[in-house]
Image 1: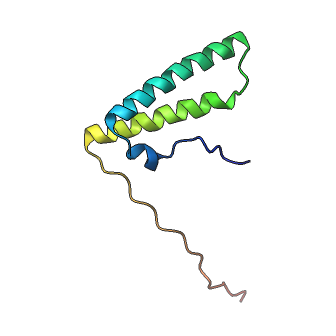
Image 2: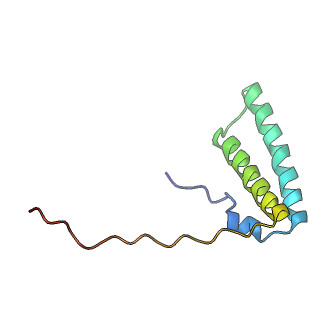
Image 3: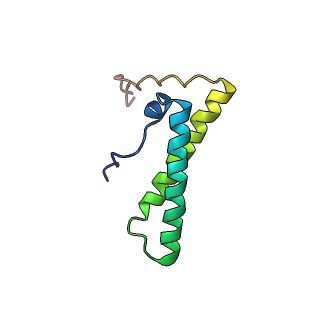
Length: 90
């Protein structure tokens, strides 16, 4: 299954200002309300959008919390390397 291209990545969110994040958060909460309303009335066309919006709200809140606590962005994990040594049968 292909990933949706409209999902905001944490790195993209971290580059935004606090004002931009507040604006985006308000937009997402309105959308979340509308999606819940559509689901309740049976008019929801894309049920996966509910989870996408919920997770994007969580990403924004997490990054805002990191900023208030003064936590730096986590470093990228190094890529895993496979061991080329094989075990012997004997």
